[in-house]
Image 1: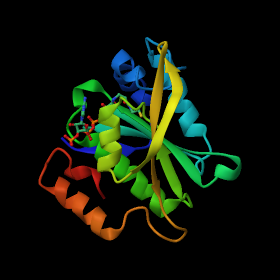
Image 2: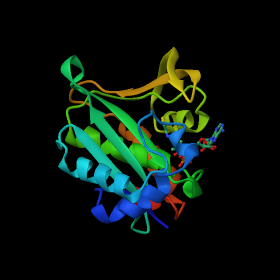
Image 3: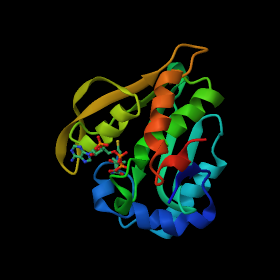
Image 4: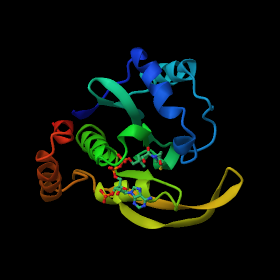
Length: 197
Ligand SMILES: CC(C)(COP(=O)(O)OP(=O)(O)OC[C@H]1O[C@@H](n2cnc3c(N)ncnc32)[C@H](O)[C@@H]1OP(=O)(O)O)[C@@H](O)C(=O)NCCC(=O)NCCS
């Protein structure tokens, strides 16, 4: 089974609803996502992504065997942060632990490296979200600090961890040596080799 990222399709709505309607995922995300997350909710999200400004919203379905099993997106910020994007992602629970999110993050960041003027991509997982922090570390992000008592989620005050990937203007996010190491690490695994170009 190959894992890829691709543009959203309206026909992904049922798969997206099945993936996201899971408290184990919603508990790790910002508030504002309904539970249960219905096919109508998913359709509205997909429509919004498909009609968004293509130079500001970089939102993709994560797919296996052509079906959406997760979501990844980078969202350009405004004002003085215009060359910064926030990264967000989740994967349907049955697919956790295969290295797929790490590859999805790498794939999207390589695409952003080639196709945008972004200089900084950041993510802010809750500090106790060890899996997400590990994904970011494996994907080459650096921990910049802990944002203490930065969120209230489900009534709990939580720290968040600020991770970022940066580059200088004209450079790539991933030096070649790092990219080649990641590709060869995935090349022997039929489950993941397909995600890279
Ligand atoms: C976080 C998430 C995207 C990870 O996806 P994934 O495909 O399972 O990630 P990967 O397999 O690429 O990597 C996960 C890593 O975390 C590690 N990990 C998982 N659970 C862990 C835990 N409780 N403690 C420590 N490490 C953990 C895995 O062992 C793996 O590291 P390894 O390759 O060194 O063994 C997925 O769990 C998810 O969707 N969670 C809910 C939503 C979420 O947290 N989104 C991110 C919000 S910032």
